[in-house]
Amino acid sequence: MKHTPTKTIGFILPNASNYFGHTLIEAFSRELDNHGYKLITALANHSIDSEKSYLKYMAEATDGIMIISDAEHYDMIEEAIPTDIPTIFLNRKPMECPHTSIIENDYAAVFQAVFSLINYGHENIACVCRNPDFSTTKEILRAYQTAMENSPAGYHEEWVHFFDRSTKDLSEIVDEMTELGCTAFFAASQTLTERLLDYLYIYNTQSDKPIELTGFANIDGNNALQKSVDMVTQPLDQMVVLAIQQILYLIEHPETEPKDYLIKGSFRKRLYKPFVSPS
Image (cartoon, rainbow, N blue to C red; front, side, top):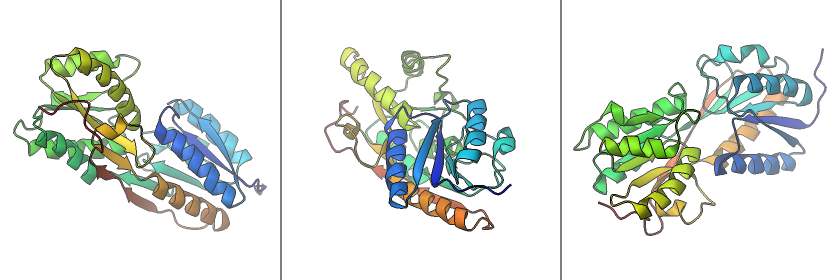
């Protein structure tokens, strides 16, 4: 049965608990409105079953879907992907995914961010990330490992921590890494950066050995605390413009061959005096 146009675009994302999610929702809504479309947003809360449910719902309710998926492999959600409207994957792409994607490449910026900590005098640097199977996580870890291999301390696998919010809180991670001698952290997502930044701000006022941090942020709109540390800034404006351009084009030209687009994050030096004194 032919899909009936709705003049709406669906957007599924894992959560909206940080500036990254909020910014994308607002920017997509604003940009689509300029093209006469409305945005329907769904939060999967890091559940693959929820992703599949929303994909099936949006297959009937929208003209196209944009998704930031937690699926590591395409076959985890394949049955729910609509066949008569376009689906675009953003930020990261499940393995073997045959659809158009807009992938963020932060290798160079992450390398610079980790090396900035080394230049501040931190040899033992922990890396805190989420799912090791995400393509973005793998890229971040490659950059982190390369930077650390060029540091005096070298690369230590035990300094990499995969955060699982169901089993550990931030205080346990900080305790674990400091016991291993780590004096600085690289946080591999905006959510982790924001949570660690808030925690370390309090922790450092009570500790004889403060910890320095660098991580991820939006390119604009950060608060003063975020601007007090070096950051990898994510190219959200570029992602939004390219995603809207592609989803609207695919609606009009459904036979277009899928394509991967790469956009790059950049390294931003801190703008304010750090809340941690360099070692």
